[in-house]
Image (cartoon, rainbow, N blue to C red; front, side, top):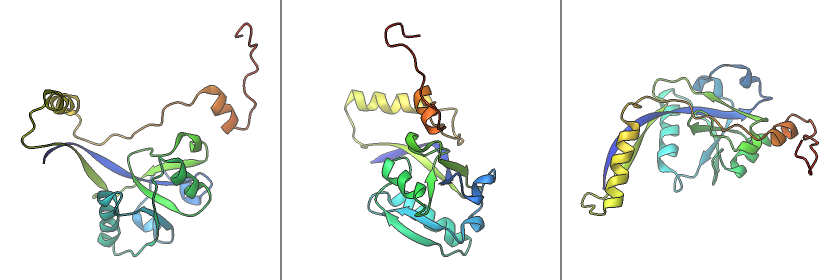
Length: 178
């Protein structure tokens, strides 16, 4: 395989909005020293696992960790955070399952080395035109995006936002749509 870096993605911290840490604009690893860290099993995501442990080692912090088989953008991972089992160190600006957007928050992890490179990879001897076209399209799409930008959760439909906020859904007439 060969690979080519496309951009760097920043790490973030996923926690409950009710957490005292959620009032901050960003977090440092020292802020997380007493938190339980939910960490994806290394067999499922070795890059995230290794990079997360490296970040703590660089700061001389030994975190309390709970291994998981999910990430916070999956429903199961968001349930773990929402139920108070711990927090995630995640890749991206908002890696939260949309159903939990009203209860969880992702804050930037402000550490100089809290980034990871995102690559496109392909077989060195690749001959398939579709694969080679994909690699070129990807290069072109990310040519000027070599720095990290936060990922935003797409806007939720009004009815779901109202439910999250505890309001009743719109009562539009089914016949007229108004």
